[in-house]
Length: 448
Ligand SMILES: *Cc1c(COP(=O)(O)O)cnc(C)c1O
Image 1: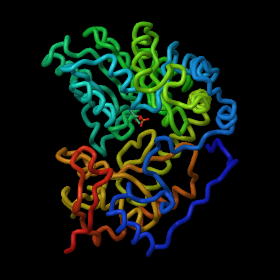
Image 2: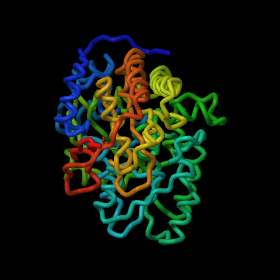
Image 3: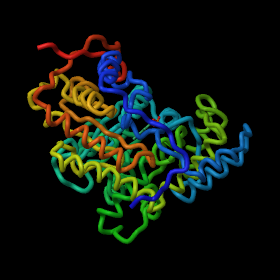
Image 4: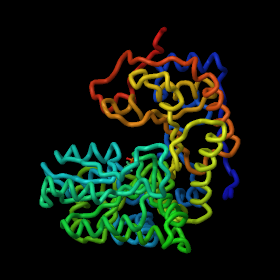
């Protein structure tokens, strides 16, 4: 059920078809090169793109910009204590700042880190410490058709095999990412989190939760895990996060702000060490790279994120979009996750081979037909892996309405109708770092 009305609006425009064709060509068939004004419904990411509430805007104006001992920081500490259950917090400019502070503090060269699935920046920060990130998702996590309640779970069997192989003494840290962003935003159960806690104790490792979408995850737990059928989202969030030794958080997700992040922990020694690294890379530990006003808005956002009405509306929007797409025959990853619907471009364009980038073709066709922007997460973004050819339509928080989603569905249905006529793409220029090529590479249609 809808939980908001609009108080401020932003005009959007659908460029003409001819203009969209020109924009695509100019952008080198890469949606990252489109200007936002050229996009009608922007589903590129849910990171920092949501709308703040009137309470958050009010907090923003009251933000305390003191270099040290800011009142806004006290508000954040109190929100993190109440909502997440941790007594110490180190603010950072965004989630990857938190990763640098925590992982730079905990890791040394040669360490192995196990995660259900490392998000890109997590993987990069661990590699940056000369440590080795290993993924242990559960079976079926990458299967777009398997129906299971917690496809985001951490595989204990997988983790045990890694520890047997490399030795427990080389695994100082394990991470559970909730929801599992790189596995289609699938949730992680509280039961799985408990078992990861026990496993961490067994091998004497620090247990970190990447809590970016902790509220969406908690909502899924109330819907799908019997033990929590009568619990509130706020209760589940505290219970689940409480198993960790430390959290990394991107405020741009369930902090409901446009920029910000933090590390949270109850461990005094770890807190002191993180503060030192924060001074080096982020800022004084009571603002840590954020403006005081943004800290204040994030403190309010964290409390709003666990309100039932907010999070139910949020996750229901994504489920409704997935259902509408399925109804018109567009193949989607099931069940849908908490922040995005993933389209299966491989199933949509069976005549295109992976090296013709079916996912990127779908991204371009969605823009050409309806000015909709999504992002490819298949062979173009992940060269040399055999992932499914997915296109992510990420939904910004509290931003779009049913009419926008109806437009997205109509657009996808139009692409589906002409699926046999579309041709593949080839890369015409790409950057030196293959892991980052989908952000800047340029392409063109393969002429037949
Ligand atoms: C977004 C994200 C991060 C990084 O946060 P930024 O605010 O983008 O720097 C880390 N982990 C996960 C799971 C994320 O989704």
